[in-house]
Length: 116
Image (tube, rainbow, N blue to C red; front, side):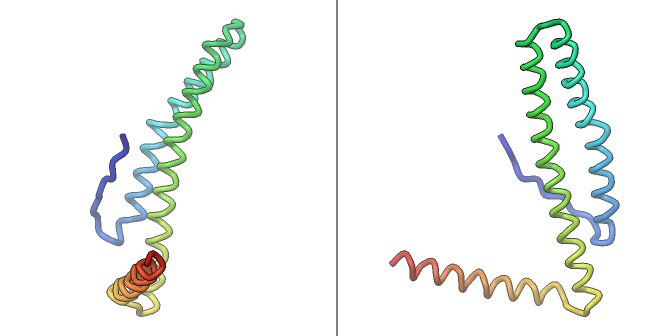
């Protein structure tokens, strides 16, 4: 079951926080993949194909989890970079929210019109 987690930190701490998350991924998640690949190699060498296939499948599942985390971290950093650029250009975050609300209202209105 997948859940959405909410995490708060200071805006200026976002790169550091993502760095910590990446470090955790490197220390905790990647070694699990390496172990599964090593198990697959050993099983293949011992001509135990069902064990090798199981280890390969497990490695793939672990890689999928890693990929999802990397996608999340990438999204966070992309949002940070955009917001940081906007702030430096003098665009207030509230202006984005107002524009998003207007766009969302327009999309909702057009969706309702199309469904009628």
